[in-house]
Image (cartoon, rainbow, N blue to C red):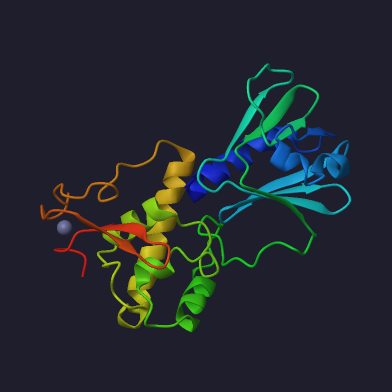
Length: 245
Ligand SMILES: [Zn+2]
């Protein structure tokens, strides 16, 4: 699953096409049936933004294309006319460069107001921690904090990697029910996620402390890191049983 910072990187790369009228092609048959090329071809690309795990591409006339990358989706920027094998989902071709979406998964037009209902973006500048906390508090307080952090309706943009790392940083176990996590602790987790994802967005990703390190020693206390599936989607949680309470 591409993490929120990967999507923000994609949004940054796509900025080179903003302001241009683009030729639009949908070579992949599953994308072609959506009729997107017909509706978007020749329109000016007015803006690209990452909101949570969605990339929203705004075109003149109020059309908004939502791209969710799921597991394998990738956006690339290449010189116009770059030869390629295979059928990408979408090509947005500008005068000099083209943006190419491989493995689209979710690609749909939404109205200007049809954007999915997402919580505040963890990479917002500044991030709206107050609203995130409010949403986490109106959720069932029996829900485990590690599970709740992946719910895009509550906080948008935290993926499995940063969930694990932020909880470790704040010394909070992913298994504690929200009821047993104080506001200060919850805020510390959100702030850690924001800070680490910001750092990763501006440069190389910081080293992992727990993510995919099951069985290896915790860098803080030396206890073996554990892993187990969590939540309805059984995403793997990683944590230190000794120093994450
Ligand atoms: Zn530890």
